[in-house]
Amino acid sequence: MNYDAIIIGGGPAGATAAAILAQHRRKVLVLEKDSFPRYHIGESLIPYCYYPLQRIGMVDKLKQSRFTKKYSVQFASIGGKVSQPFYFFNHLDNEVALTWQVTRAEFDTMMLENARQLGADVRNNIRVKSAIEEDGSVKGVVAQDAAGNEHVFRAPLTIDASGRNGFFATRKGWRIHDEKLKKVAIWTYFKGAKRDPGYDEGATTVAYLPQKGWFWYIPLVDDTVSVGVVADKDYLYDQQRDPAAIFRREVAKNLWIKDHLSTGTQFGQYQVTGDFSYRSRYCAADGIVLTGDAFAFLDPVFSSGLYFALLGGQLAGDAAEKALQENDVSAGRFSEYGEAFCAAIEAMRKLVYAFYDREFNFKDFLTRYPHLAADVTDCLIGNVEKDFSEMFEAVKEFADVPAPLPHGRPYIVSEKAAG
Ligand SMILES: Cc1cc2nc3c(=O)[nH]c(=O)nc-3n(C[C@H](O)[C@H](O)[C@H](O)COP(=O)(O)OP(=O)(O)OC[C@H]3O[C@@H](n4cnc5c(N)ncnc54)[C@H](O)[C@@H]3O)c2cc1C
Image (cartoon, rainbow, N blue to C red; front, side, top):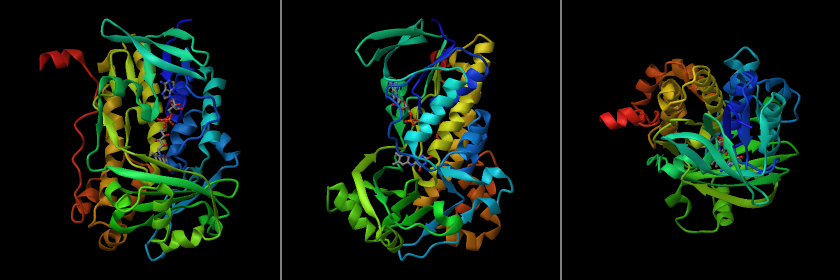
C-alpha cells in the first residue's frame, strides 16, 4: 500500500502530526518501535498544550481522564520558602488555564489511539532502520518488525518524530548541542510523599539548589510523585558517581523537597540522562520534515518539551498537508514551518537562559518590573507567539539574553549549491 505520509515514532509529536493528516483524510502510516503502553519521562503539561490537543480532539478525553489536575507552578527556595504560586486561572479566564500532570505510558497510548481512531494506520513494534533516498529526496523507509522481517514503505513525505533518538538528524550529523545548557538530570519516583492542599495539590514545584541546580516535583496519579534533580554535570558529579547517592545528597540541600519526601517511599530506578539540549541544523530536506524532540529539545525546566512536541506535530502536520495538496514536498516548502517553530522555541529559550544565569531570579526581576509579571506568565504557560521584546530588554539588566540560533531552517539544495 502506498501512503501520503509516513511518520517515524508514535510519541506525542508523531501522534499529533498523524491525527492532523488523518483529519485531512490522508493515508498516514505511523511506525513506532515500542509496544505501548511504555514508560517515558516528561510528565507535566503547560496550559497552551490545550490548543494542539483541542485540534486533534484530545481535550475532552483528558478532562475525563484520571490525570492529576495542574493549576499552577510554584518555586521553592533552598530554605524551604515557597513563592506565591503562578495560578494559571489568575491569568486566563477560560478552560485553557487547567492542564495536567500525565503518566506518559497512559497519555502516549491515548494520543496514539486517538490518531488511530481518526484513521491513521498505526503500527507498534516496528523500527525504522533506514530512509529510502532517491534523486536526493526521501521517498519512504525500510523498517524491521519484532520478528526481524524487513518492510519497505513508500510515501512522498516522511515526518521524523523519533524523539531524542533523532533518526534523521543523527544519521546526517545535523544535531547541534546547546553549549550553554549542558545539564544532567537524575530522577526517580516516590509513593506517599506530601502533597500541598487544595489547588496546589497538583502544582509543579521547582525547588532551587546551589549553583542554579533545581528539583522538579510533579504529583502524578496513584499517590506517586516524580522527582528529579537537574544541574551542571560538574556540580552533580563533583564528589560521587552513584546517582542514588547524588540524589539523596541533593534532597538534603532543599528543605521543601526534604520535608515533602519525608513521608514518601522511593521506588524504581534512579534514572540519569544528559546532553539533552540541542537543535538540528535543518528542520527538513526534500521529502522529509523533522518535528518534536527529533528536531529540537530545550531543557526540562518550565516543562516546555511536550508543548513543543504537540505544537511541532501540529505545525508539521499542517505544513505537510499543504505540501501534499500542492504536490511539492521539497525542503523549501517547510521554510515557514521552520521559522514558526524556531521562533516559538526561541522565546522559551531566552527565559531558560535567564533561569540558569547566576544573576537572575524571578523575585528580584518582578520586584523591579512588576508590570512584566503577565509577560513572564505568558511565556511560562506557552503563549510564545506574544511579543516579549520589552520583557527580554528588562531581563538583560540581570542576565545574558542569547541571540536566536541561526540554524533550524530547511536544507535547500539549490541554496547550498549557490553559496
Ligand atoms: C529529564 C527530562 C525531563 C523532562 N520533563 C518534562 C516535563 O516535565 N514536561 C514536558 O513537557 N516535557 C518534559 N521533557 C521532555 C519530553 O520528554 C519530550 O519533549 C517529549 O517526550 C517529546 O515528544 P516526542 O514525541 O518528540 O518524542 P518521544 O516522546 O520521545 O517519542 C518518540 C517516539 O519515537 C519512537 N522511535 C524512536 N526511534 C524510532 C525508530 N527508528 N523507529 C520507530 N520508532 C522510533 C520512540 O520509541 C518514541 O516512542 C523532559 C525531558 C527530559 C530529558
